[in-house]
Structure formats: structure tokens, C-alpha cells
Image (cartoon, rainbow, N blue to C red):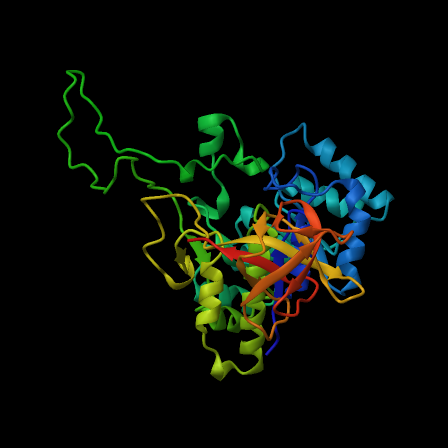
Length: 412
């Protein structure tokens, strides 16, 4: 059985490192504002040489997202960007695109770079696959609205490579094509500026007649608390339990959502699905979901999980809250070692040496484990009792630490 590609999101260099360290086969990123996560950190032109070198050094792949639905004024800007990428030879392994105009532009200017069609376009059937094949598309990201059998049927045609989402936030609209943000606030979701009105609280209020009395109709019943009800708020997708079916479907790539997520989130999700894919490929009959995987996925920012349309689940909304909750927070990342083999930590959130922390290890054979820090110093050797964020320190720890390991604390 062929192992599908594990594709991870990355909004900045720390997320790229986390994805690569924990086992992603490829990463996808945004360049400037021309992607559907325009408010993610994204990458500038001056970052791309280092970014490409970093990813390709590990024999991984990188895809650039140019998947907004651009207005007339943005097409010249995208053309200028693509011309600069060609001129400076800063080319990815593929572009992720949605708009036919951008497809045509990329084929004209950089015909040798493969094109992957975003889920935003919505490829639901074989005829669509044939159409996009004729337009030069190499791979399609299938819609989340398909079920397992439909995914398998499309993948088995072999017309194009296929990619599906396996984890992350979901959209209440079909393939993310939503106009609510543009209507309510003038922020256009299909241009990467979604204000997420599906996460807002709403109240159900009967319409009034001309006399001011409620109309006598059979109104929709919905539970709500004092804060209203989150009618449109989708749960987060988690497919770890049904992963064997997704791999057996024959898709080319399994994609994680989350270019606005932290490096900690990326590391935990990639690590879990890397272990799951490898276990299934190694011995399909022995695939089980151990408690450690469930605990790790429960520890990161997430709304209640669902398997969504893949299994025909009907309860995909979380109506009492739209917030993503987390059971842990990153403290720092091991960046290397001093001559004395002391781990060097890039501190992300302050901590003190009397805390017992947990390590999210890059070693795939290890699950998260506790660690105590007995001594901290700055790089000049000065002893520190309370360590503030955004500094680099050396530590004496109860467990050996590897480059890329993440230290985190549990949140009650």
C-alpha cells in the first residue's frame, strides 16, 4: 500500500520547522495577501530563498497558495508576483490555485510548475476532474462535503491526483464559498479576509406583524443561553479514528488545516498523524488509536471534534460556544546544544524552574513525557530563577532533550 503524502500548514518559519521536525512530507504557505489566510503571518519575497532551502534540504516539498478569488485590480498584482518568482527562480513544487484567471496566468508564465486546485473551487465529480485536467491541473483538493465512498470513487479514476483534509477547522459553507463576511462587514472571505461570522453568537427572534405582535407561525426551536446560540459554528475535523478508510480510498495527500495556528499546534497534529499513517502502512490489521494520540490531539487548541461528512455524521455544530479550547501551552523550543550538551531553549512563554513541564518530542518513537528544570542560565552563564518570554537560555533538565523538542505546560 502506498503511503499518502502528509501535508502541513505553515504561517511562519517556526511552523515550518515544527512541521518538518515532526514528520510532514510537505508544507503549504501563503505568499503575501493573495491566499485564503491573508491575515496569517505569511511570507514575503525576501523570505523565499531561505524558505525553499530549508524545506528542500530535508527532501520535502513546498506549495505556495495563490488561491484567492481576485478582483480585477488584484490580477495585475498577482501577475507581478509570479513574474518576480520566475525571474528570481523562487519557484515552489506547486501552486495552489482557485481562480481560472490565475490558473491561466500561471500556465502562461511558469508552465513547468504544477498546479493544485484548491478546495474552494469545489470539484465534486468525474466531469469536473476531466475539465480541470484539460486546464493543466495536476491535483485537486476534494471538498469536505464528500463522503468516503465518493472520495474513493473519484480517487480511483486516476484522472488527477487527489488530496483531502484530515484535521482542522471546518466551514459551514459549501467548500468555503461564503459571502456572509462581505455582507456583514465588507470583509471578503474569498479574498482571504474572512471575519468568521459563523463563529458569532445569534439569537432567534420571530418576525413582527404590522401591529407589533409576533406572527403566529411554527418557529424553529433552538436551545440558547444568555449569550445566544452559535447556530452556524462548525466543529473541528478530526479523522484519526477513520484514517484507515481515508488511506484505503487511494488519495494522494492528506492535508492538515491551520495556517493561522501556532507551531505547537502544527507539531502536535503532524506528530500524531505521522505516527498513525506509518502504523497503518506498516500493518493495516493492527491499526488502533492509542490513548496517547487522543490525549495529544485533545491538548491543543480545538473545538469539539467531528468526522464530518466523511462518515455522514449529523451533529457537526457546536451551538453553545465558538471558542477553541486548549489543555496546554508552549513554553519553549529546543534550538540546539552548548558544548557541555546543555539544551538551548528559545523561550516563547515565561516560566519558573520549580514548574514540571511536558516535552512534545520530535522522536516519533516517544510520546510526551514530563521534565523538570533544575537550573537555567542565560548564554553568558548568569543564573535565572524566573524566565521571561522571547529570550534564549540554557537549561539543566531531568531528561535529555533533542533539537526541535517542545516544552509545554498543562492548563487547568
